[in-house]
Length: 404
Ligand SMILES: [Zn+2]
Image (cartoon, rainbow, N blue to C red; front, side):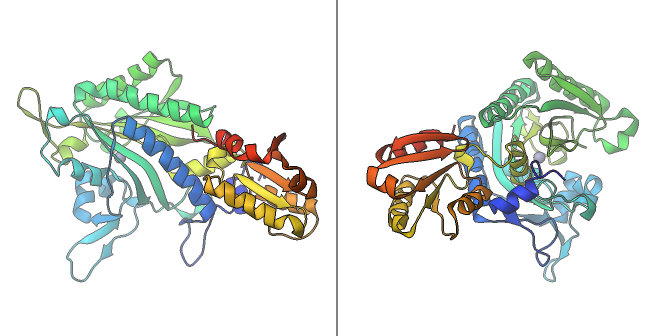
């Protein structure tokens, strides 16, 4: 196991999450530093999604058996679902939701819809539960409870290509801003030899697969095709990336679903006044918080971009005489929304610097008698040392940690 690329070791030092036997395998508890990363990613995505016309909803973590009968999850996805809960006062089984889609379909049908409402983009950072077998659990990258950067877009089938293009643009933008490289697209198709695993008629499978293929070709995005990797309700474009030097995994996927509209009796009034089933695009550019944070930790070897760092400034007073100055500096930074902490450890400075490194702060500032007397500081930003006046610290740091 390579230390450098294992998010479990990095996260342990950076105090991101933990597991506990009494809570359950694969059910991470996020610590304050981990929640900072989640929150920043959510703010980032919510801002982009608002601009792209998404509306946000919140749905419960469980639902009755009927819902998953109708969606087909109990047939095609049962092995990955937690066993049902039966409540004495209720004659139905309840399941923890393995996906947010059925709940979002209910949002669509909660109000009469016409072509004027489409595309209807419904987004949620939605918590789901999947009963992964214990052998495949791995830190945050494979868990049993996860929160997805989810959305479902309800479209007139004729708009599928243009909406898929917009969704692809959103993915490309996110990864470019985050500085992620080395991913590739996989066009995941149905397998005509395994008809029972893929709902719906062959012509719709072929038509929807061709739409995705053309979008990728026209955009000039390199991709490869994989037969049998489609979702049971439609073909998809997966974003494939290596994690921690291991095999390639899907970090996100864009699915074109021509089945759920009919299954859920979703309808809208078309331009010609007829009732039609919409198609649905399922998408999650940042996948789940769990897998995406694991990916970011491994990709950046813990040295996250400034805006995502749980600790943006780690202040080290050399002696007790500088502690008051360091505390005041930290309070000033916090007042300007820069996350900072003052070192509380004792021992030699070099030992304390090593300890600080565990948290992978964006910057370190050592405060000795010289700094206090001169008002000149040295900002150690990763490998770079920047000399500046104390009065320039806040504006300079703010620039460096700005959310892109
Ligand atoms: Zn979905």
